[in-house]
Length: 222
Image: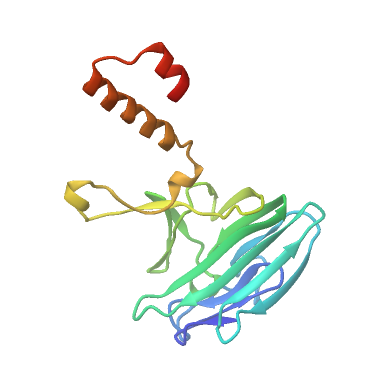
């Protein structure tokens, strides 16, 4: 179980959150599979193959760490509810530890104790689920495919890889007008040419100062 003193989530050893009243203890549940496996709703993150799992808290915290061990690799998921004043936030961070692990994600909220399935809409890199007058927003969800009243994805994790994404924060003009403002690290999945760019800038500056760049310099230094 993880909590922020305003609500609490039951996190199973199978990586599924099967109970969570949102945003308070006395609010209706959005994940309630503990009451009804089919209709209650859940937020599941787990390997698709046979696996063994273990859970432990980070010492002196309510941060829960689960380790999944499969025949092909190991993956770790860190779960916690952030203590963030009036705003409620659930964090799930998945990281590859060794080998290669295929992970299935299923985001299936059900509002009002499982009685109201959600309607989904996308906003930048977020997925918003709404129903029964409430809504929840899942960030870094651009790769999830919406299937009727659920959203799902299949990811492959390798050592050191972490499921991460990038989202746009609306309403901010950005530093010196450089909107849109983005949070996250979407560039981690992009092909980077930073070093080559510096080399080309250096060559351009050299050409400005000397007037020419000989084939010998290109071959030796660039």
